[in-house]
Image (cartoon, rainbow, N blue to C red; front, side):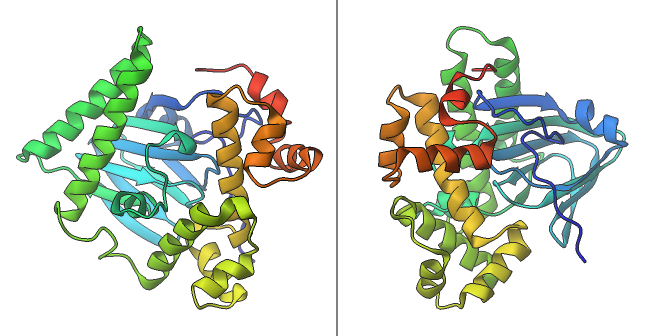
Length: 293
């Protein structure tokens, strides 16, 4: 029997408190040293993560796949992806944890960049390449700006993050190749599934709808999703609804009832129960919860 993959709210944590921030930054040694330089496989429901490997080496574990890490490199991990790491003791760099709903382009959107965000990636930075050096410098600036919390930091952090991600995607694809070219058939199916969910989630289509759209049985689709994310098709659908609800709660002042209506919930009480079951807080509690901004 397979051991359940834990779902953490932050890198290596299960705090039970919903996040009230969109970006968190810490050094890789500060966390991995507490766990003997090894982070067991887990996943995040709400977060997209970027690891900048400035020095050292190790392994990135994505489900059953293991990729060797050689510095310098950038690792991107989308929500619900099973992942873990084994680091050398001389590892150095940063972990950026981003509220997925805050990304300019969401994983699974109908764009090359959205497709690129949908899968875990390990991208080598080439020491003699100008673009690679610019990515590394941008991530250093992002870390410094996140730590300083100066006036206007949020806008600069967003600009640095978007630049680093898009340049890394361009580097991975050679600037012109399709980002899905190296993906397996099942990974391409997952990309198409997340794109369909992004298109239809407000209409609360059942998992069977997406299976039909992909020409698969619901059982086969669930098997693929579980293999690649550790969850189910319904978990992806629910996760998208929660991401959008949190985006509205965090960045707008509209009522909880109106947010529920926008997301296709005809019954405000059911929307609140749906949110509470999956986050541990009611929508109003989540909106009021203290934390980083």
